Amino acid sequence: MSRSVTVIGLGPMGQAMAAAYLDRGYEVTVWNRTPSRADALVARGAKPAETTEEALAANELVILSLIDYDAMYTAFAGAEHAVAGRVLVNLSSDTPEKARAAARWVEGLGGTHLTGGVLSPPPGIGSPDMSTFYSGPREAYEKFRADLEVITGKTDYRGEDPGVAALMYQLNMVIFWPAMLAYWQAVALAGAHGISASEIAPYATENYAGMGQFIDFYAPRIDAGNHAGDVDRISMGVASMEHVVHTNADAGVDTAFPEAVLAAFRQGAAAGHGSDSFSKLVDLLREPA
Ligand code: NDP
Image (cartoon, rainbow, N blue to C red):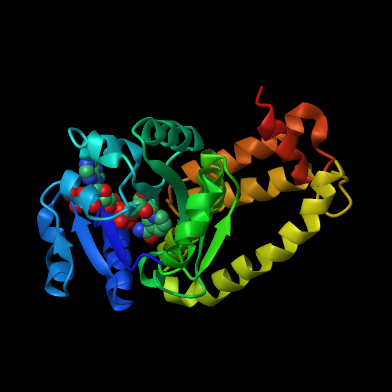
């Protein structure tokens, strides 16, 4: 275990990570483009680096928590030589291809790149229950595993391909953002009728909690290529989504998001799958016309 770490990028995530290391008694060096964001951490004993070169020089283990991968290249401009011998654990989110390119870039500079995808908001950082995907060189992961478990108690190592942790993270985001937008849509519609977000919260929570049962039901059927319309049919989905669009329109609420969902159902019906389950949309999404 290294007991000393550098954290580069002090947005809410990086700040929470640096704080978690300080809580565990680590010697923590921090760098942020806007230096003032380090103030509270420095008051707690973190060492502020004036440059990324200094931040990289301070520790073998370097955690990156930037808005995206491009920010790393900007932040390291002129300090590339200092990457040699460092293990960069990149917890910034981006595409699998950007993660693979970054791994090649870091390796070309004589460093090691581990990709991470954190499945926790800032308040969950440091929690034993939260989890992070990692991929990249297994040796580096094993060497620093205990240190990484400070960030989230659970780590899910997905193999050597640096793109995989980014992909696993993106799969979660593909679900998370639209799922939350669906909730915002419901809150906006409820609000148009004088019903508060808090009033519908228990119903929304129950709705989302039940999603697991749908996933468990459909996943093996999809894998088996079974899209039988024995439980639901796309034609029913078209009618139901039309009701959703019209209910929003009648209340003067924006319909762009439900219309996008309706369009997917209509495509399924237009392709001749009105009598199939809406799980058939997976095939159509995979091979867009
Ligand atoms: P923020 O956008 O709040 O912080 C981004 C950080 O990137 C800041 O330190 C910012 O510096 C820095 N930055 C942005 N552009 C540049 C640049 N060109 N050069 C140098 N530094 C730059 O993000 P979060 O802390 O919320 O998240 C960090 C990462 O973690 C993101 O990739 C996010 O997707 C991911 N993530 C976030 C979660 C969350 O709930 N917040 C949950 C899981 C993952 P400055 O302070 O100077 O602006």
